[in-house]
Amino acid sequence: MDDRLVQYDDKMNKTMKNLQEEFGSIRAGRANPHVLDKLRVDYYGTPTPIQQVANVNVPEPRMILIQPWEPSMVKVIEKTILTSDLGINPTNDGKSIRLVFPELTEERRKDLAKEIKKKGEAAKVAVRNIRRDANDSFKKLGKKEDISEDEIKELEGKIQKMTDKFIADIDKAVEEKTKEIMTV
Image (cartoon, rainbow, N blue to C red; front, side, top):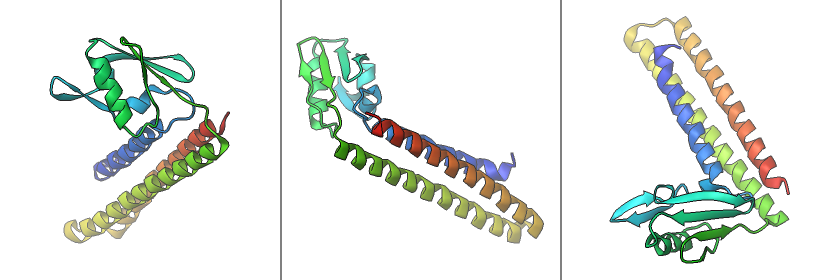
């Protein structure tokens, strides 16, 4: 790959990774431990991911079981989950915390599908903005470094192909996540 394209490829990859992380936090009625990824608990004064202070597993399709390594962390984790935007009430038996995910209603599934589509569109806009920035920098490069118009056109063509590939990947990710959400 042309050195002048590497930075834009990196930016587009980051956009794609960010979208997948956002999709991971959208729950589909099935328990997915990734919904806890953004939550941090106070562990001796340090904000720490729940996965680093407890064992997190999925014993049943709609339940997450969190088993803290230190009994004192049960209340801290429970409080963090209650104050988060997860919308799930944890149950605590003193040693572990259970998160039971309710079955999604048809209306909620449709709302989530719209949200997924919106996030996908935002990612596409970000990719197109990266392409625009790349094209602008190629034009400036042409004026500064005396690069021929043909070379600039070639770079623009390559960045367009890259953009098309990422847009197709985003569409595919949106389609897969929507299918997952809509499957009962």
